[in-house]
Amino acid sequence: MLSIRDMQDSDCQPLAEWMVTVPLWQRYGLTVGGAAGQFRAALAHEDVLITADDEEGLPAGFAWMMPKGAFGRSPYLRLIGVRPDRAAQGGGALLLEAIEARAWAVSDVFFLLVSDFNVRAQQFYERHGYTRVGALPDYVVPGVAELIFWKHRAG
Image 1: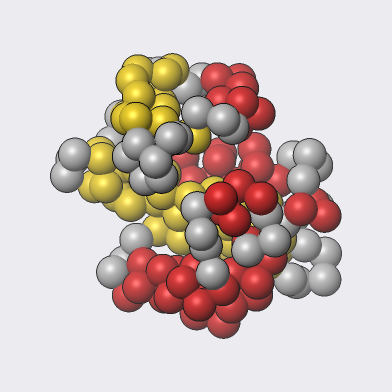
Image 2: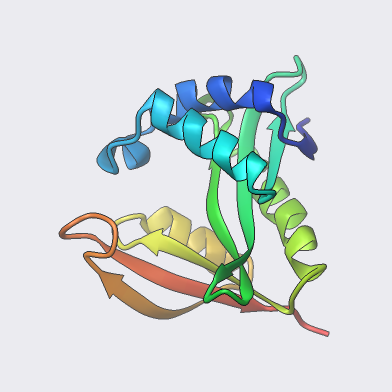
């Protein structure tokens, strides 16, 4: 069972080391130094970063939310990931639920982007109540559209 906690600086390097093994992030040219540096900058900027620890206390996943990252107004899920050896075990849903709880504390809407080729992620977000509302062709990488998803909190 995974347990959720706030990310610490000491998590940045171990998370970055497995992230660069994931084909999705390889396609975006992610490096260990780049990923660890982005996490550290986000922690200093007071973005919301959480970690899912495995039974041995090692970081097995993370979620990164920028409270006003979408249009300077709404929470934006910058990144979410689960270590490959822990994939398809419910960790992504656990992390999404935990980071959504933080988002709902500041807004009734939550945005994220998904690569057009990442069909499994699109299906994951749709199962969790997200709706595709647009696309940004060539936004991050040439030849890849980033699909805009959003969720409105029921209530």
